[in-house]
Image (cartoon, rainbow, N blue to C red; front, side, top):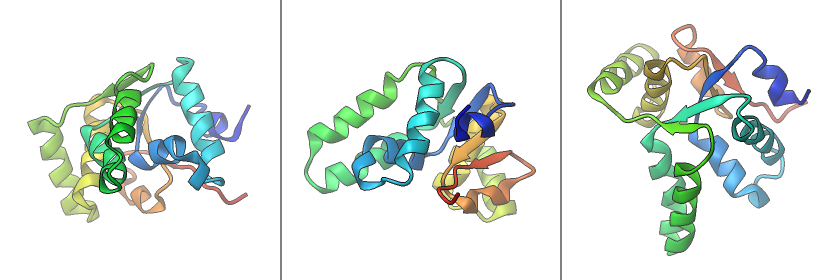
Length: 151
């Protein structure tokens, strides 16, 4: 069992933060994070774990390629995300927005982070997976599993 599989042993349905996608899609620039992201997405692709993310992820993964004038890369990322097996994109509904406002108010999250967490909560995810240690402050409202590159 790999490191990520061990961390997710008790999870069947997870939220995935944008940074996981970035480290997967642009793995050459993130040699420490890429193996963990790869293992995460292999678990999802195989169906061992189902996953959700929010439309915030689309915005965030397309930003840098667009800034660099790489429209084709931006749309490749979007297509990969929207067609990834066993991954759902949770709409940002009024319920998600309401929950995000609670998370912002109580845990002082930035709006994109609050929306990611709220989407996972509303969808009924067991946990949110991220590389961002700061996201763990939303516990106990939501279990956060931080993929740590340190041994």
